[in-house]
Amino acid sequence: MPKLRTFLALDSADKIASLEAIVLVLYAKALIASVPPRRWRSRFGAVANKTGLAGDIATIRRVRLAMQRALNNVPGAPNCLPQALAARWMLQRRGIASSLFIGIQRDDAGIARFHAWLKVGDEWVTGLCDESVYTILTPGDADPA
Image (cartoon, rainbow, N blue to C red; front, top):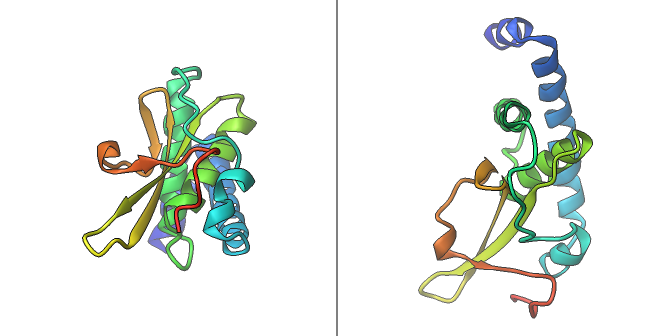
């Protein structure tokens, strides 16, 4: 019952955002499962579209915290891409433009490792990482596989 008690203690905007995040991250997870990695760039919209900080910082942080709450309550621990997509959709609904980044990093054996993150200007929303270790995939890139 501690999770329910914690949820009930939230203000109404945080409750709604948390429930929205749970639903959207589950939807994003199912959607990603049906799309092969070579089609991510075209299917999930513009990537690496650097935007300035254009939005209420409190709203951006509310979305980030709602996503963190959702991840603590969603089965199957969704990875970075469902998180970034769900947060992006939440921000879009609130009229805030964001930048979705999908990067690739190859290990010593040449095996590709993908990572996705979302930012509004320099403000991190999901996927905090060292961006310099990833090659950003853009819509015109060749297939990474």
